[in-house]
Structure formats: structure tokens, C-alpha cells
Image (tube, rainbow, N blue to C red; front, side, top):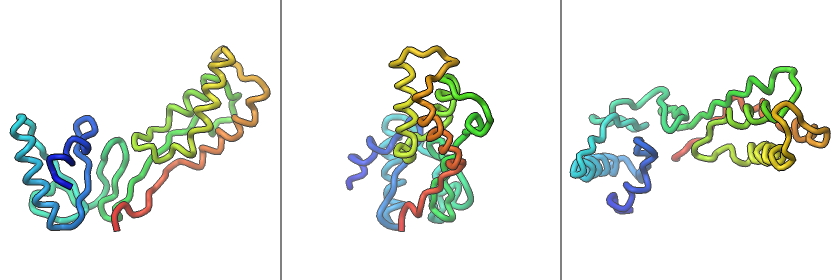
Length: 162
């Protein structure tokens, strides 16, 4: 893919996140991307990759990208799920469901299949016009399903690139 057409689809807020086909393409992509962005007075810096190159500022260990942890050594992404609210023996209410659902930061949509039902259940509480601290009995089975999200303390991707 041409770098000029690839760049607009590679930015997420202030992060340029993209991939290249091979090691030789890394250098040409970085140089051309810097050149293109400098024409608009943008300074691309802080390059991170799982390939060792002279202009790469970090090429091993963990680094953050889009709120996720990228392990450069294993080339995996980790999504940390804060679901302490679900581990407490507390009555599930609209408030606790919202807290649990919103405690999952998943900007790439990796966990969507696992979190979709809990979002639908939350939507149901709004449709029923429930107060913040009540949940009707017929949502109890949904709440038990929501508690299964506790198994997502950390999700780790398989190798991103082989």
C-alpha cells in the first residue's frame, strides 16, 4: 500500500499505529512518513517497534499503544480489565452494571464479543426506566453472565504478525 494513502488510516488521536510487510519497509515507511508529516509541521517521534533499527526509541519490553500494553518481545497486545466491582459480593444494580461495563477499555474492539451482552443488559435497564439502585428479578440471569467477565482480568492476543 502506498504510504500517502496508508497514513490517514493509521492515526488514532496522536498515535500512528500501523504495520509493514518486512524489515526493509520499516525504514522507508518511517522516512517517508516523517517527510509527509513535517510538511504539515507535525513531528513524528518516539518510534516503537519489535524490530531493532537505529531510529527506534524502544524495541523490547512493554509499551503502551492506544491504552493497551504491547509486548514488543512477544508481539502481543494485553488488555487489562478492571472488574473489581464484579468480584465484591454486592447486589447488582443499574449503577454496578454501568460501572462494570464502562470499566472495560477496549479501543480496538477486541473484547466486543465478550462484552456485548452486558451492554445489551445495561440498555435493558434504561428501557425499563429503572432507578440507579434496583434491578428486576428477570435480569438476575443476565447479571450472573456479567459476573463471568471476571475471567477477563487480562486478555492477551496471539502473535500479531508472524
